[in-house]
Length: 164
Image 1 (cartoon, helix red, strand yellow):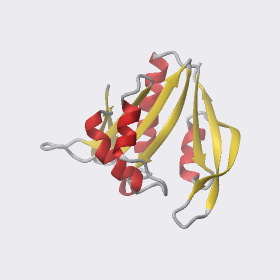
Image 2 (image 1 turned 30 degrees about the vertical axis):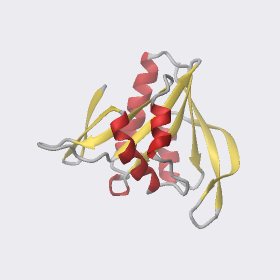
Image 3 (image 1 turned 90 degrees about the horizontal axis):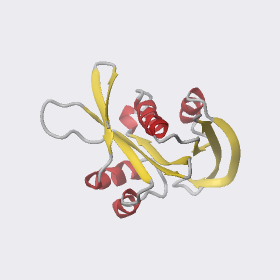
């Protein structure tokens, strides 16, 4: 799937993740999480039949521009979950997270999935706002789920969107 998107004057495109993307995925993930996933962990996920995802890049006239964000999800038995979603710091609040979530939800619609779940750090107000605008609601909480690089713990909100 290839989905175009404009943010300001920059055009972006979301496309299916491939194994070639795993080093860039690991690098982006390391900039956003205290316990980043390695490219080997991303490879192990991407080879599973139930796992899919999208990368977003700026459209460039030549060369292969770097990934500016990605989302990885899993679908099984009619229910899906976001495994991880990351947008490069320089591109946050530019609509790329929404673009990635839209790509996942389109995919799930074609697969006739019933629900999509995700976990989000309770302090990530921008992401929570996006998810609520997309129709997600709180269905649970995981105390001390996330660890910051300085050792502090924060809770995760478990959110759900009914897709049908």
